[in-house]
Amino acid sequence: MKKSIIALAVAGALTAPMVAQADATLYGSLRVQIADADGSDLDIQDNTSRIGIKATSELFNGATAIAHFETYANTESGSFGTPDKGRLAYVGVTGDMGTVTVGRQWLPAYLWTVGKTDIMAAASTETTHSYATGGRQGNAAAYVSPNMSGLQLAVAVVARDAAGVDAGGDTTDDVDATHVAANYSMGGFGIALSTLQYKGTVDENINSIGVNYSADNFYVGLSAEDDEVNRNGADNIYVLAGSYTMDNTKLLASYTDFGDDAADVDGGKRFIAEVQQKLGKQAFVFANYIEANGDAEDAANAVDTFAVGYNVSF
Image (tube, rainbow, N blue to C red; front, side, top):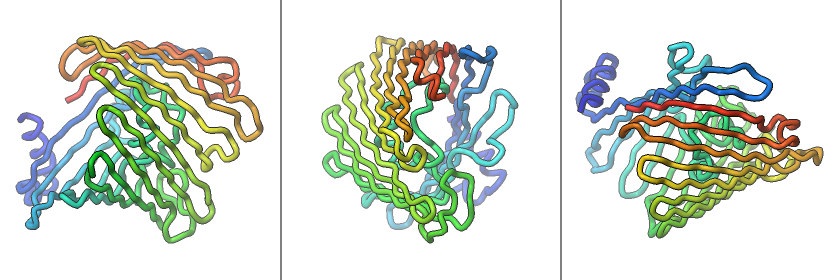
């Protein structure tokens, strides 16, 4: 209730007539970690904190209009955003026929495949996937089908007339990238396939698959990605990750094989172990350890790191 009141007050200061007819919710998560990485000084750092507003409004035809804005909230500088971009900013409509969204948004290329193994709380573990080309994209329009007996389909396009703020930029084609994905889930099992095809001057694809299984307090996921945009000629990156929850404690682990790069140099292996301890409904602490082998360190894919952190959401 408090969040809805605050969100309405904030949004109402900008567009009172519109929000007065919408259901808006303010949310956020402030995340701080202390990281000690080999070869670097001790660092008390922000851990991808964010703040956002979600809004819905009923349309005359029975569908629901949606709006979502989310930006970074940096605990080091005390500022919002980054120098050139935020996280999410889109509008759309959802109903019995599916969901259409336009603006800066997550693509199913991430959510349905490699996101299945991106489960750690520590920010330093996010090195296996390019968010800038295969994760959040601005200048994007997407359609996600309704759930059809466990099956969902998605299509998306990215079209920009200038470089923009995301990797890939303006490929000089009218449509800079096209995206098709499928996700099937049933009885705790899920599998998804995705292809994100960049056009024009880039003319490369990002193809990925994700498989997951969950039962009671156990979860395991496997992802494989062939990123020709950022790693053309390199092997796929494989990630195996899992977790087990016991009351307020969660144990997590993952293994990454970076494969060979385009010059057939071994990208190395990485193992991560993490424990999370809930302190309340919306607060937890964690300890995370990354063990990288010599090849991974030489390729700058990973480095031995110990981190502890504290996350508070609202």
